Image 1 (cartoon, rainbow, N blue to C red):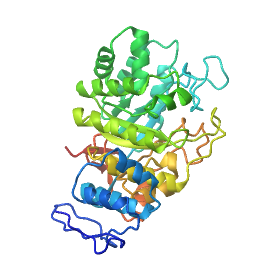
Image 2: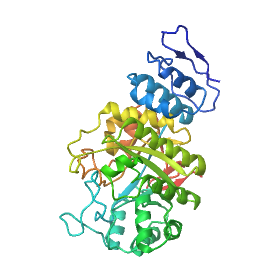
Image 3: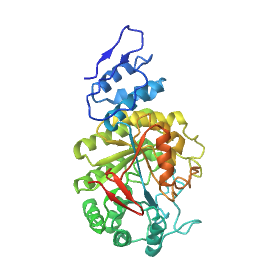
Image 4: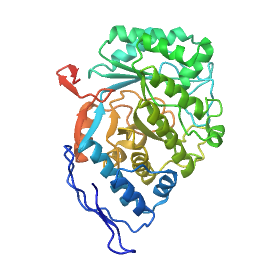
Length: 401
């Protein structure tokens, strides 16, 4: 039971927590307080473990009391994870930047014969994977462009070759957008395409390409991609076939608060049905070098609010990730007190957001991630892709099952 107390109609509402869970909570600095009347019924719901609705989500975005919103998100975060913050040792591989979609939001994709276009030969991709293996990575994260000429077999061979060379490494590969495109080119159903990918060695899927599900927004920023319903149905099919995935939302461009809330509630509905989403990752839009470069970048306040609202609305998602590559390591640290329980991993070489002007390092050492988490007052726990604890043994690792 999470009791509440409201002493006067116009005074801040205060809540005091009774901890009966076996999870050890971080020390609480103060009780919940707010002068924003819109947050009081939301706080009652949060503390009673009741689901928030669309109007609650909009109110959280529009509240001027960011500390109260953050307090609620941190409360839920600590109720789920105590003082733990997760990270992993991973390696990004982008086999090609050739893409037919020509999305206005993207600075990564190139036309086939355009300047800067590249496509890795299979051996080159395998060597790229090996070049980031010095810290014994536990995950290869593979996404790329929608290449008009590469056959489906190229991608199956890419994954099979990685599995053969690095059998311990979890392969998280191909967004819902890539799956739908490859299915169309190979003249296969989504289920058939995913089955072949799984048989080749794909263990789970990233969450990219979701952007914003609103048709109005997608027509502006990514008109040539699958629509929101198709993204969700592809994810649903993957989950039904035993492939877990992440989910993302790109924010800070031409969407509004209602679009963001709608996006997360549609993800929440699929999660109710499948339970297949592992983590939610809000992605801050980087406008530089895109067709939308007239737009401003997101502020730190927008970033930490997005993390907090995500944690409060997505009650059936176990994890909320503050992706340090997108929001900087400094904001990711703060986000660990605003609802996030994960800051992603070492990455080694990130291309997509750096092409769009990201100024963060392209990779980070394991020791740096541990330091960031500890400086935020959290306890670092290295995980694998499925959130199992990783135990290090010099140059190797084991996974606690």
